[in-house]
Image (cartoon, rainbow, N blue to C red; front, side, top):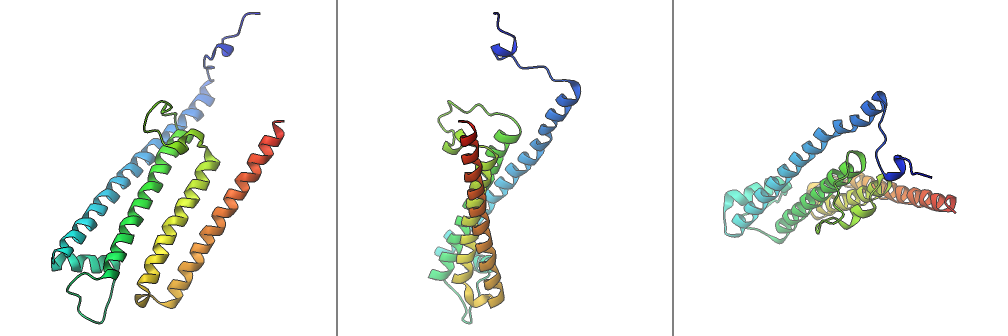
Length: 203
């Protein structure tokens, strides 16, 4: 029996209304372009902070004061040179920027691939490993994990600079971090149950 056009892999022509609805996914494109702009801002912020840190190492007082104001560090004594706490807080801030940037990449690449259009990166040498099996559920779990990492960095910065924070602020940051952790665990568990249900239904 001759094969139908659909069996040869030819796309089925959509009716006007379904075609319009399906094409509406391209409305998300400006959102992802906006996230790329946000990524550029984070890159600029990273290099500004890094340059200030390098200048402060060589004794630039203006750069040192910019770092102190940026990290919210306070001390009873006048600070005229870098100390270990300031360096640690600045480096944690840089790590925080990198982790948020990684989160943006996951949202931009994974979201575009999942909800807008295929990128056809199968044979590209730099294709992210996680993009091979990305879907909405996997993306949610990875985003939850990334948010926990970012929250951990913020919490660590708060504990290192604990003298400048109120106890209630520290307590609520801890509670929020635990909430993020429990939420990510719940999402991962739900995704595991759904995957198990789908695999069981396939047999």
